[in-house]
Length: 177
Image 1 (spheres, helix red, strand yellow):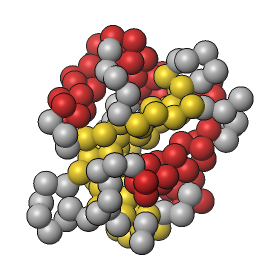
Image 2 (cartoon, one colour):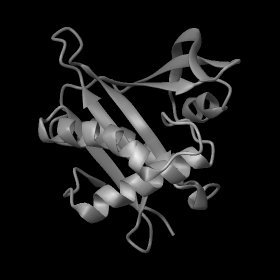
Image 3 (cartoon, one colour):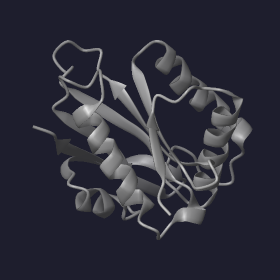
Image 4 (cartoon, helix red, strand yellow):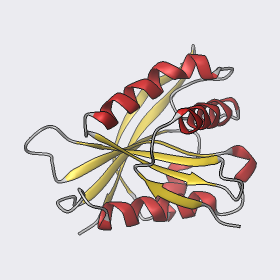
């Protein structure tokens, strides 16, 4: 099976709870998505609320992937730049695939859907690149490189996962034009 992707889905309780559950499950499986395990959906709720508020304000867009049962299985949030000199690229945040779906190629599918959205969706006409950051030491930068992203910057030891466990903040870019 493959995931079914949707841009700007209707935000209801089912979607909200699905994203919270996904985010907690990814975090607790060791995913580098802003939290360190153990974490609960309630601890993540304020971060999701910020994304949802930004969506209502038009500065953020959500790409969600659902599995064959209709459950939220993957996400990526696009955030547009407010700075007038940087409106030609978007940030990509909270890129996740549920751990139960790991190893099925859904991560590649998600990144292909991200690129397709940025190239074709309404509101993205002026976008020339996607920029993201990732946590060093996880290997995810290699995954993004296989999806066409290039490392364009690195801040050593910028992310403190735990005392004595500092990681690089890696900036990656996918040119679209």
